[in-house]
Length: 260
Length: 278
Image 1 (tube, each protein chain N blue to C red):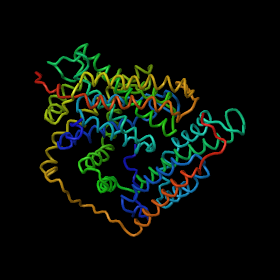
Image 2 (cartoon, chains in turn brown, green; image 1 turned 90 degrees about the vertical axis):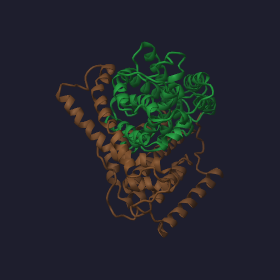
Image 3 (cartoon, rainbow over the protein chains, first blue to last red; image 1 turned 45 degrees about the horizontal axis):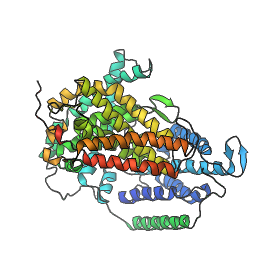
């Protein structure tokens, strides 16, 4: 597992305030679920691709290419079972259901891409501070931020323990499903124990530094909303509102599509 | 559900949230693709054993940890997307239900020995019961939302998630709990040793709450699948039929509400008993 998905570039997206980047993700999510016609999804798709290009987050998308490929094939085929249309093409494929399948696939891929863009351009601490500034309680933010930092360490200790157990003859790949699952016990127990045993020391260290002593907190890291942030937030908000308005007016559907 | 909020005032509980989230996420990421059930779609995830264990050992901290851990698993695993939202709530339930129900499983867990371990046959049965209900609750929450948004059909996803969660719990859970409980107890990290009894919800009818939770989770699973299969034409473990079928999500909605009501009626205070451990 690669510990860090953040890409250390100095792009215009990286320089945006963390709150702006979180809200861009939320905006994308809201607009993407509105339309079922892929043509109507093209504007938001273009914006997401532009966002990816500006953020230079292609590298992270490339790392999950196998997953994206599987999702694409699966989704393109699957949705033709759940919809039908007036113009039959072949086997399960109608023109309308195929279009719908393309739209659902775009939905999945663009949502994942938006998530990757957010993670690729925002450091963990910025992300958590952004969420805190947007209303998340500090203590919850602290737990998320600590967990994000600990995942690579825990994953590394899991790898070490797995190698040690394999060297002692543990074969994780043999046997039926039940046998294979039981073989995970020698991994699950040591990782749990080594991670959890530090709780009390961790707690004392935090409290000795005044954790939880005051409700109002100051942060070393400072976030600043710039003019560009404001333009993006207002523009994005308008884009969402216009999209909702168009959806309410009945645009963005696929004529002739039946979803049973 | 008072303790779900109150626990954030306790430093050790906050740390347990972070640590459980890190463990869960690390295993989710490391074994993505593990033992495949349906290629490209789902697999048996050994990590799914953790939420019920976290719930029973760490109470509300385990519930938050499981929810956050699943979210982080999605982020690092590249699957952060539409399913992540209710994946958060589903995984929260997967840990929340076991600790809330533990003291109200129809006498299977004695009032004199509420220790969250499987050291007797009755407790083993109690563990399997709460894990089954939690697995179904998690499945109903996630599948309801994904069917509602038209992403994956209810009948397929609900049964898949239930089997996935329960398989890990039933095979690995008792072993892990038996081995881990004494150590966690010795370190003073069982949630009833950290939190004050007054910070835990009294629950106005734990036994009825337990029944509502069971009916909500298992009823939502079974009735939802039956309606999906008959009304919407979906097939269990097959890809046919319709999603966004009003009948499916309208029928399942009351079961979700039953689970929420059950959550408020259950307590957890009954687990605050003096225990003798050597």
